[in-house]
Image 1: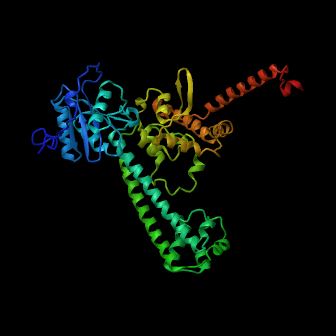
Image 2: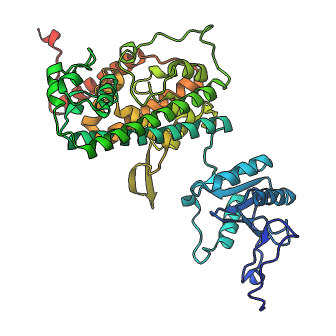
Image 3: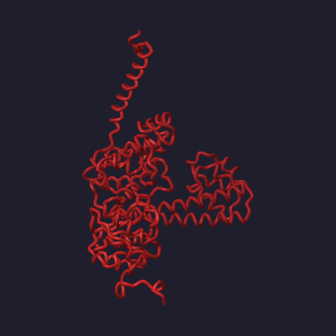
Length: 474
């Protein structure tokens, strides 16, 4: 066997394999100022990872490790033996999660970074050089760790994201039920707003059971349905083809199966949320007056959890965040994404910048090359945008602000600007433990009116006119 075809040497009988570079012996060591001397770099892969430590910590500072659990523990033990206290890695899919958790068990601080922020230099695109490049950048203090909530919050986040997937899959079966009804020209899903409500499910069960008389099916109508019984009867006349009935039956069974899984997920989320230490006891400090009672009296949306989100969110955060316009159904989802410790962001400006809701620009040579919202993907930022988007017809000062910004900036920029304002209110309430005060909007509106009046006076003076109030003119 030639020397080139020999297998790589290993560190004893077990442990990470020693990775060798073809030109490793030709490379000269160059000393640079080091800010984190105990830093390691890890290149993440699906089946194997490459780990680099400082050259003075081991005879072979770059090693290859498989991604089996036992191999990951051996890698962590080797890092501890080398005196490593922090390790940087790229956020590659979900492959980094087991490595991150194993390093946490051994007390090694993980620095999860965006791959865009540490592109490799030309000519060094192998895994062997990539982990060294990551280690070098991390030792120089040039990498910033991504935000990751505490372990308990991460568990809730995983459950919430899994629940969202279940809701999406359940909604697909609802669409397929509507497709089967349309193919049979049974138009009752156009006569009622939701075929998964009491009336809709009762009629679907009767159709699947074999009932075909429109008059009998129309009598299953709930009194609260706006459509009349005659309209419902006419919409239930169609061509009852057996293949479409079979598709309708199976989709209905799958929808109910997903609803059962969603209910199980809700119970687990409620259990996890209740395990957190409450910041306030509603019995000692009652919740503020609910200014959204009319909205809460409406029919509960099919995708919302079954437990009392307002009370649970109040105990978690210590303030009633559901009073912020647009955040009524999103508070627990925001908790799963950002947690409740706002000290990780020094100011509200840092928080909205992390969310990607603030303007940014690219300046080179004193010239602005690009200006606009930062191109970043943030689940929490998307939630704030969703809250802002829901305020188009909301009769609150926040809704007025959204409509005013739409007329000035356009829909997309207006949604971002409103989400920016909602995020600042969220950060202020959680960090300073103050309740939402809608009266502050009156002061801001008064200041805005003064600015508009001053602008009109200035424009009139520029054209040689003078504005006189109506009362003074009379």
